[in-house]
Amino acid sequence: MTAVQSVERSLHLLREIAEEPGRLVELADRVNLPTSTTARLLATLESNNAIERNSDGVYRIGVLIKTMGRVAEPGVNLETIAQPHLLDLSSQFDEATCIAVLIGRNTVTTQQVDAPKPVQAEDWTGTRVPLHAGSAGLVIMASWDDHEVDTYLQGNLSTHTEHTVTDPDILLKRINRVRRIGAVWTHSEYVLGLSSCAAAICGSNGRAIGALYTYGPSYRYPLSGEARTVATTVRERARQISASLNRQPEMIKEAS
Image (cartoon, rainbow, N blue to C red; front, side, top):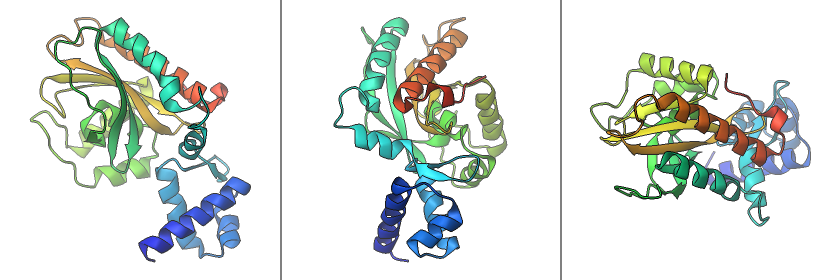
């Protein structure tokens, strides 16, 4: 299957799912493709949040497509929803706050609000960070199933600083911890001297489409005794953004 064929077939699947959600075998029949081919296309679309699958195996349009369709509607796209939260958190913590989204095996920062009085300011917008090397990526992976996590951890785990964690067993323990508490801190793992705390922004099925994170110089962030408060606040704000984005607050998976 060529790249063009793959795109055409994926778009055909999206159109069918938009018209009427369905299960794998049904969708394969509707688009006249082998079940194995359809399964691969669906897996790719799901991993990029273009579609989502519920517990009954029914595929429906995901948050990525919904969000793209809302771009022209004031007040309902991710950037608009997140902005007041970023401003509040930046003021509260006196550090930068950002939104990152999942693209392939990386997170990409799409939105940033600097600290009110930054000692040093750096715009991370557009920067790609491997999932294992940053707080945003770890919280995104925590929403995946075990097979997806294992597949990522078996791939190339690049090193960026002396503190980058590349041991799959240690990373898996961290991911499982995120699953329990809903947030994570990283320190100097992608850039020396920077600490970051993140929580996932989730679709209606509990799968992360991105992350809310805050970062600052490690020598002052977090302050002594501040880490838990920051993590709790970031987690709650991410939950609020998720609820607003999906307009179905009761379906957002709470971090426990």
